[in-house]
Image (tube, rainbow, N blue to C red; front, side, top):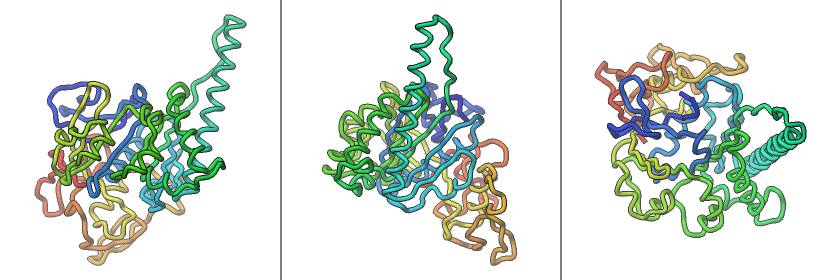
Length: 348
């Protein structure tokens, strides 16, 4: 998609606004990250946060233009593994690697900001055009943020909790000026994790707020965490893929499309092939996922090989084809019936 926007899902509204944009006769929900550069995602357990992140990262990976995307899994569960090897994408896994990525992003942002200010000062002295070319976008996304934050050492080192929070606050304050965008995603918090890992001066920078709760719904603690409003959960659609985005005075309920993790051994052949088909080729084709024979003699894409009849949370459903254009999966299920995802269905 792009144009400074990242696709989230099918909007559950008939009124276009900055968060719900028309495309192909439908309204799609987007995060307009160039206007609102930083975001917070709160997910209820089993509510579809990880699926939403996969959809967003897939849309960004398919978008035109050059950018660097750093995808961090703070718990070390490898939730972004499907994006390994894509151009411009760097993965980190676990506490230390994620902290190193935050430190590196802060250093890069500081370098960009210093270079920009030097160019402005030179322009002031010479009254000529500032000799500064905007750099490529840099996206830093951290999943399982609060769990990661609580695992950090309580020390004065650069990789300690205090400095990591300080780095993230600075990215939130200055990142937009130099094309650095921050996204933090977390599960249901407890009081200690909020106080330690998401202080007010950091949360204030995350002006795009998103909650993904699916059929679970959002309780008052999760609602307060996401929207600073304990009653906001009542406005989140309680359905498969149900989610809500809020920026300023704009608020849109939406439905996250199903997109499986093709590296999960329990993902069905249909869902695996659909997910791989949406991604660009890997940089190194010698290690690209290869099709392997399935148990029924067909072909199954993905590194896990074919598993005919493998369990699929979406019962073999294809990914929502709307935002992804060519090479998309069929909007029909394996038995030939119309796929619920084609009507905006989602599965957390």
